[in-house]
Amino acid sequence: MGPLRIGFFYGVIAAFVALASDFRFLFIDPEAIPDWLLTAIEEFRTQFALTAILFLGILAAIRTRPTRIDPDVSYRSILLRDCVLAATVVAVMAGLALFVATALNATLFADEIRAYASDATPSIVAYNEKVASRLDDPPPLPSAAEIEEDLQPPVLRDLGRSMANLVLRAVLVGAAGAVVGLVRGRSRPSGASKPHDG
Image 1 (spheres, rainbow, N blue to C red):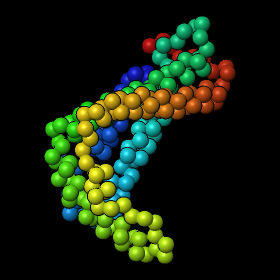
Image 2 (image 1 turned 180 degrees about the vertical axis):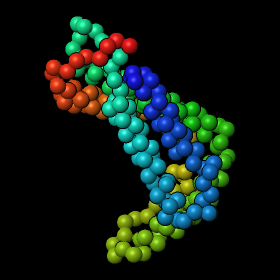
Image 3 (image 1 turned 60 degrees about the vertical axis):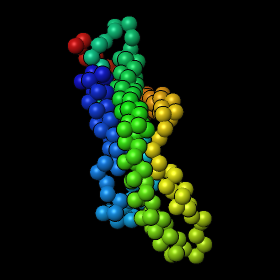
Image 4 (image 1 turned 90 degrees about the vertical axis):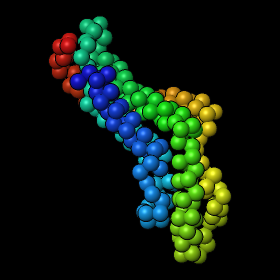
């Protein structure tokens, strides 16, 4: 499967992961799930989404196969190019999904996010205090106001930051795809035949 098709396939999955992370308030009831789970979701959801996007980009680079061969260019160079392209497509699709989610959260869903923040804050505060009570020297805990502020919806000016993050994410995942391409190129026997044009 060529880099654009495989990148699109895994990019769709990455976009769903990104949307699920940003639209979590639509299907999570803060009062109906355990405090520890809610706290973990809010603390690690961004890292989880980025890790999932990176993993899917690497997986796309592993699965891609060059379909257009230039006789004047080495197979390893073409493989490197296609691995980078497949991984970058994944990152761009996820980034576009996050950009749309930011726009919707700043406008259409702003009130829902504020209500979610108000409901989730007491549970997170209670869990933090519970954990701190078990420690001999607990670190300073964020106040309820600080936690609720972190859960507030984005504003329209955050769209610029979202676009910048899209570019940075594309560079990072594309670099991971390049590493995969280099490893795959080195592991390919030098005498192996090139795939036919398709």
